[in-house]
Image (cartoon, rainbow, N blue to C red):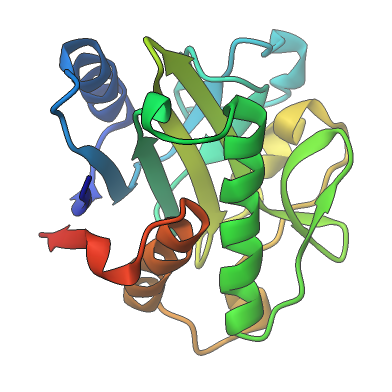
Amino acid sequence: MTILVKELGTVAYDVSYAAMRDFNASRTAATEDEIWLLEHPPVYTLGLSGKRNNLINTGTIPVVETDRGGQVTYHGPGQLVAYLLIDLSRRPYAVKRFVTLIEQAIIDYLQSIGISAERKAGAPGVYVTGKKIAALGVRVKRKGSYHGLALNVDMDLSPYQGINPCGYAGMECTRIKDLIDTINMQEVYKSLPEFLLRQLDLSQSSFSDVA
């Protein structure tokens, strides 16, 4: 089935969170899968494993508890978020493999623009020279996935100092802009979905751009 790739612009976290849950709850066997590309205003999110002692100094940035996997992370302008609303009953892999495929898509995309990235054992996400450049967290309910990935492109990294990112004290974060000065958000919006779809075993022609 077709995967629709939708660029949604800047959306408040609580609005997109409610929309994802509603989408998953109402989907049927005929519902097409979707990938939502967007950015959030500044917000910290706590996953199901999140511990509040990893919130160090959040200041005026709101903290939202969510039902995704993982610990605490930060979202803000200049970070590309991709929410993957995928019916896993149509696919020949389990949740753990699904997460691995998402990581590989990010690694492959970064490689395509000249950045060498890797996984870390026991720490989901994607890293460049030990610094986290992309966070992952998914939820699967009724065999449908939601939540997804957050890739640091050209964002203010200072809010990460207010938390232990993903529960790791002292973890450093990085962004594409620090590695490739000429990058811009629209290039990433345009290119990343191709790599996600490739890892999901779909051809490049199997998606539609929806503004």
